[in-house]
Image 1: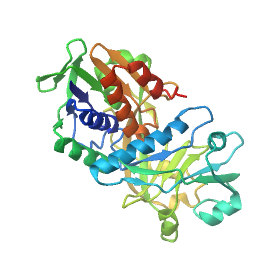
Image 2: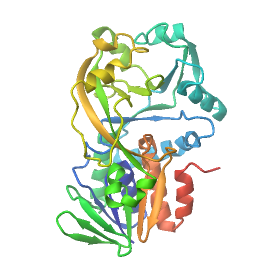
Image 3: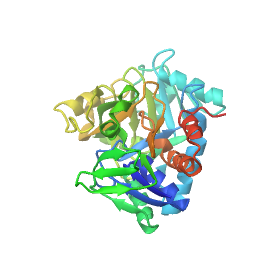
Image 4: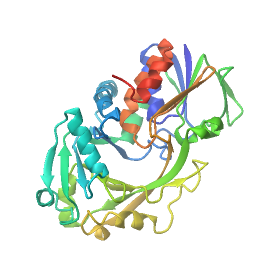
Length: 366
């Protein structure tokens, strides 16, 4: 079968990888370079973790996600996962950290529960008296997105996949199985898989009733000298409640990253406002105190804007239009499942069992 994959973020690259391994003739088309720093999966790194609310379903799927990543590492010859565990900090009864704790306990996944004093002693970048308790788990870490993309695209080229960079798709004809590029050229295939992230609404505006695009930002920082060693050994931090934030410590040469939704803005155009706004980096940093002590002493290194696509319930989505399958595994937590999504999409295209794929994407599995 000839398949065109539109979009070379992690879902597109993984789908092309898995389709090629199944013996299909694959072309992957990306509007920018690969890796594309503007893509949702184009930043330096993303979090993988098992923490989810009880009953959400995705916590159980992390096992499959790890298995899929192991297959990727074996194929590309490098492991781009820094499995350093994760930490949650609870500040209020019933907050997200507490929900994640309940989810871990309900799933039978072990955690190390610490009172506030013990947590500050272990991680002195935390501010004493600013939180109730913390818990940590070894089951999480940081995936290095750009290195993953480089490894996968290298594998694709070596295994006969046609890779088209700087080739923007402007139209998809689902009935004809045809895509049109900005250059006016067309490409034909038996099947088209669209994994265009926040740009999907430009190709399928009718999905606007189910998908919403947002612009947000993350900031990279240099911690005070006396805390550098502690941060370099720290787990990723989830559920910094009160600010809906997360932190990825320095990992394999990348900087300390703070992310929060204080500048999350709905947008009808994924290309809109991708340049940093004055004062945005400092505001994003400062919102983390508390529970991060002396946050204002952290030096801003870089601010990176991000474009995401979300469903209302933050679950993944797949829709068929003729010969075209649109897959949207973003919703703010998609990267960790990227390799598994690719394997599942390829299996669905191969077998025709798209209903099973949809159930898996929504974590409606036993």
